[in-house]
Length: 180
Image (cartoon, rainbow, N blue to C red; front, side, top):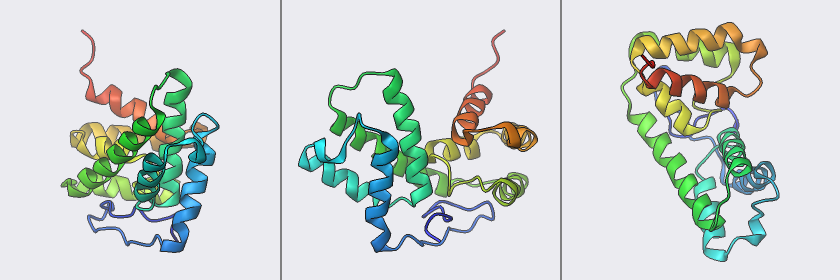
């Protein structure tokens, strides 16, 4: 299922995920991405080079990851003004691919791999459904901090409505040293 795999990202088991996004799903990914991004960034309003670059990058992402990235970018757009939307969008999408590739190269400790597998199994949340930057930053945390993050997510899962935003905020909190 194209929605369920983290195209190219390491799975909690340490295996590379199956490349399951068929070429005929690429247009659906593009349409859903721009639908979620909102009216501020219409595909047909982008200059042709930016439009084609966005299509190429989106073709490399599974639908659920593209939607998570779109939701994250839409939130940014709602708070900030962007001059050259096409260039900004292409840079943000390239950053998502870079983060996905970096996460795939991370060596995930065994305890964290088990916790991430539980997160996937119990909550259907992981590399296949989070913005790649969030997943990369989660697996880069020191193991104890990452396990704390996963445990807190699992404990509050039923009340968390935006998984990516919650994990992004929690990872940021755990990355930054506590204010003295």
